[in-house]
Length: 168
Image (tube, rainbow, N blue to C red):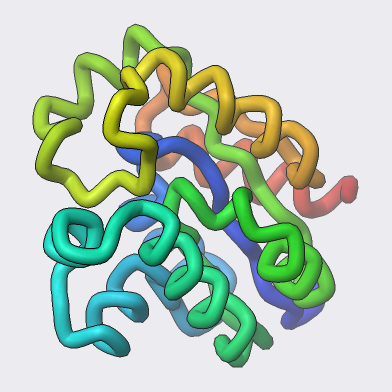
């Protein structure tokens, strides 16, 4: 593989941050978690930004962070809502392949117990299932590679990603 970047997308709870760090080690690349970058830039947590400024403002901040990110030679774990920014995703796709870490809704429900307080950019009336359906279509739209992550440990997922990269 060249030294291009690798972009991870998927729902909250899919394992983007955890797998991103492991993939960065495997590939010898830097690692960036855009949720952390947002919090550092804003000096605030995602949840507090949501509560005080609303989900659309959080998405706007996220887009700004995506567009100002040096996305070269990095594994980038995006926030689950990054796919709402067409400009942001087009920029990230120009830096390397986009990998959708796909996890079924029932498994995500097992993994996420703090839906209301996790800082997930969503409409206030939106259920987790509705959010899942809305985002799944966007993840599929932007993905160059899709890897199922529900019945595999981190090592197996990384192996699948590495195999897919060799043939993409």
